[in-house]
Image 1 (cartoon, one colour):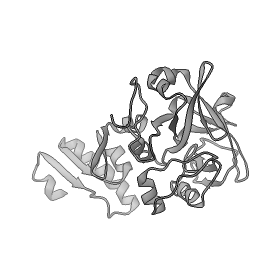
Image 2 (spheres, helix red, strand yellow):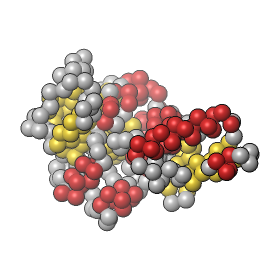
Image 3 (cartoon, helix red, strand yellow):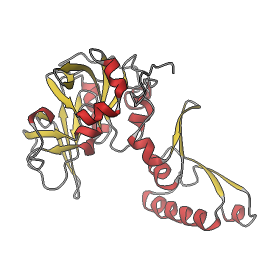
Image 4 (cartoon, helix red, strand yellow):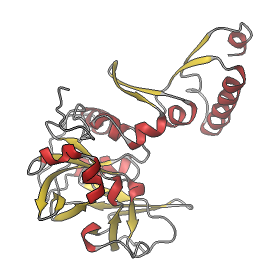
Length: 283
């Protein structure tokens, strides 16, 4: 890198320069490269499989899958507004939990129903995403990040329609945070890449109420999750929480942070349902 810098090039091309370093040195060098790049002001194309490097170092991040561009945007936009199912499941650590659900209108409310659970979608969110109206009565993919699930014992203001009952499957205490995994009796959603990397084979989709062993392992490997990642979910409750491995108080869901994708199939091409009037997988 030093030899490249002294030549004062117009563009730097870096292909995973930190891949062979240990974790501590990667963090140090990540900050050092960002500092040098800011000082030089030289355009840099940085290739990495590490999303932490991409999110912390990039002004704009391009997400590719099998050589095909999925989305290019500012890091925070990728996190807040993923363009499709692949980006939604790829960006974020722990990964977003994805589950099959159905949008149903009940009076003035729009509900996302999965298994025995019902979540009322915030009216402001429905107003911001008019495309949701076209999916009422249809299957969708519901996505919730671990950090958007909270211990209801602490989030006492959450109404009943935004709470989930859960029994803890696994509790991981990490000092500054606790990751809680729990099963969800609803069909799981796994992208092709998840099946390839986590299971090593094409896993069949689960049926409602079933919790296949492979999918439980997969969910645990993905560190933590919020509502349903596979048939096992987890959450990242903030502050002191009262969960044990036998019981977990109701989980409250942040109403404005729910993600919706088309459920045309379980490939990674399901498009995010956004502010447009209608959106299809081929658009």
